[in-house]
Amino acid sequence: MSAAFSVEPRASATAEEEAYRHIQRALRVGRYKSGERLIPEDIAAEIGMSRMPVREAFRRLASEGLVVLRPNRGCVVAGLTLDELYETFEMRSVLEGLAVRLAMPNIGEDEIDDLERLLDRMERAGQSSSSDWVVRHQEFHGSICALSHRPKLIHQISALHAVIEPYMRIWFDDVEKPLSAREEHASVISALRSGDARHAERVMQDHILGTAPLLAEFVTPNRTMKPGR
Image 1 (cartoon, one colour):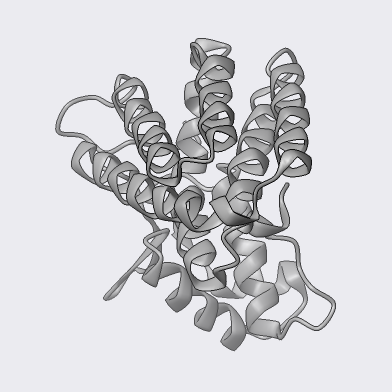
Image 2 (cartoon, rainbow, N blue to C red):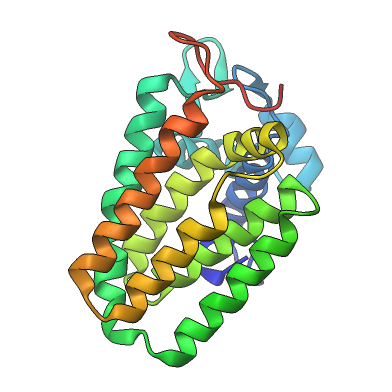
């Protein structure tokens, strides 16, 4: 995965950061189901630390929409309604479009070649498993966003990818391979190669917004999406 969207622990990470990354990783891969209660004592024992850093991690995850802190129920894994699904993709489209526009001065032939290689890796991963494809997909998007050199923007985009990731895995499993995925991502590369920042921004926005209705087909109207089903 691109360093931009990486959730791997760092050597100098605090206990809270380690707990946050551990739980976020589990949520992203669908280990916990929507509505499931997270027990701080169990997670703390699993990681090998006290409960306090885990509770602090819960607060951070709640601010990102991955969990909900409820009176008398503690920390519960969040799910997405249809409206929330569309809102998440709308936010992604705006923020990643901005990242593309800011990245344009930093994109040359070497960067385009790197993205072409990432697209090839995504294509090969599509023949194997949902886990591989989702990782390569995020690697592609993360590499573009990283070229914006805007750490706070990248962090916000990464948080939105984390919210969507479990559902992307479900979607991929059901359809075997997202339709026209290579063509759509190739069009993003073509827009980046054009040198027209506004055009590239629009292409990225359209690409992201076009995914939402496809993913929404797996949501029963007026119900919450349930990863880990």
